[in-house]
Amino acid sequence: MIEVQNITKRYGHHTAIDRVTFSVAKGEVLAFLGPNGAGKTTTMRILTCFMPATEGTARVAGFDCADQPLEVKRRIGYLPETPPVYQEFTVTEYLTFVGRLRGMAGRNLTTALDQSIGRLELGTVRHRLIGNLSRGYRQRVGLAQALLHDPPVLILDEPTVGLDPKQIIEIRELIKSLAGSHSVILSTHILPEATAVCQRVVIISGGRIVAEDTPEQLSARLRQSEKISVTMKRPPVDADAKLRSIPGVLNVFSGQNPGTVLIECVLGQDLRDDIARFVVSNGWGLLELRTISMTLEDVFLRLTREEEGLSQAAGTPLADPAPTSQETTQP
Image (tube, rainbow, N blue to C red; front, top):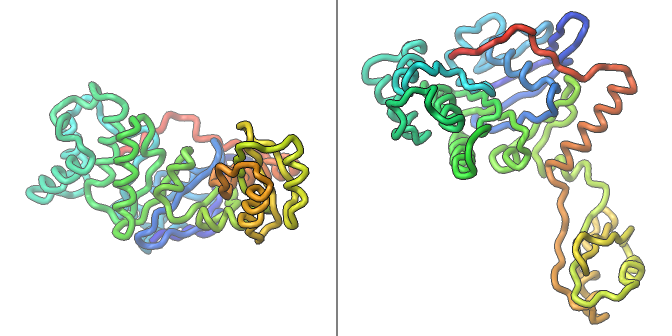
């Protein structure tokens, strides 16, 4: 549904994104992750036909973003980080205006408007001025306009910014419900959010793609050892040294809580049974034993730090300067 091939964007002598390549299948939810200035927004602006790439091609639903921008825009819903809303309109007036811009009219527009308002739970504020709404409600209005024409592709830049915890959960559930019928690119700084709603992750750093896979596969690829957390009721002073004697144990570290240790084991070996038997047979009082997985945050930090180190060694600037003028994307 989305095909990006070697797109590059330059601002003068600075390269904001460099030969970026990835794809999004029909019905897939993709997380697009990266530190500030990595090139996420630049990539999204190219996909939404807001700006052209210097080199390379980007296609949405088979249409070229540079040569067929109107066809692309008909098939995408876009929520930028700052919602593109007119604050002097009511919610209903604004969504009606957006629908008419998209060629909707009559019963089709009325039905789509009611469905979008219902999905985002905007019924209680539909007749209020957008300028008088909280940031969270304005964010939901922005998401409502992106969904209004039921596009096959959604591009969402920080969709849960400004929402309270209950609203965040609701938006995450909405995004998950769109999987299968819509292709979604979700840009977020909230890494648990990516894990919760996305099937695949693309990590960009310094304008380049540094990883692309499922969160589980990324963790497996980067993991160098197995880690097990053990909590004991009566560990002796030399528990760390004795645990190191178990075959396959590489190292033992003291945990944050009393009686807890983190055991690092040889990659690919499951030593939970051996460790549990050792602790119990010594009468140390086994309270808890669990494996420690490499989180998406661990993966993200490791990959981006490695890329920063390589870029700085090569003398490549990492900033992703946006155009200096104040730019607002309207639907």
